[in-house]
Every structure is written in C-alpha cells, then in structure tokens.
Image (cartoon, rainbow, N blue to C red):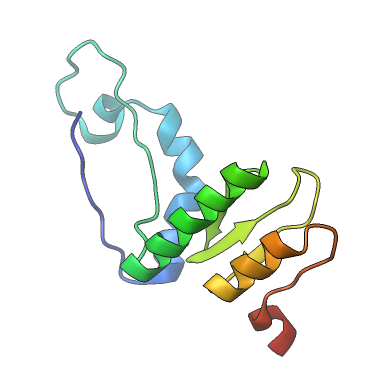
Length: 118
C-alpha cells in the first residue's frame, strides 16, 4: 500500500474534495493517475488528518463511544460529533468537558458550549 498526503490551500478546498471522495473511491488509482496497475484493486481513501489536540480528543471520544455503546464519532470541518444512538441528533464535542457531560448525563439532551454561544 502506498500513502499520499495532499495539503489543500484552504479548508473549503479540502471539504470540496472530501465531498467528492466517493466518486474518487470508485475509480482505481490506475484510472486517476495513470500508474501501473499491479492486479490488486487500488482505490483512494480520503481521510482528514486532525491536528494533534483534536486527534487526542477524537481518540478519547472513540474510547468513550465504545465503552458506552454509542456509535463511533465522526469528523466534519475539524469538529468531532458523537451520537448516543444512530437515529439521534449529532452532538458537537469541542472539549473534554463536552465529552464528560455527554457520558455523565445519558438521558439528557446535551449541546456543546460552542453551540450554546451561537
């Protein structure tokens, strides 16, 4: 497997690419880049590389989700979101306080402090 890191000029360009990623993921790397095909299915995967502090928070969110039986957290625009159930509204987790509030009050509606300020 080969890894390629792409740096975008703006967050908007990155999000535009990630929105189009399903189209790219259906194409082989041979079709996109014209490189030799070794017979194995080689497709692109588009993942956001989080800043280190966000990545550590994401890992704590993933651990909490597993411990409490929640769906895995997901990332949009460098914000981490969690759900208590697949059909519940996503909750933005911006800090350890937001995460602690989510897991400590399982029956209450929780919004992050960032959402409350808006």
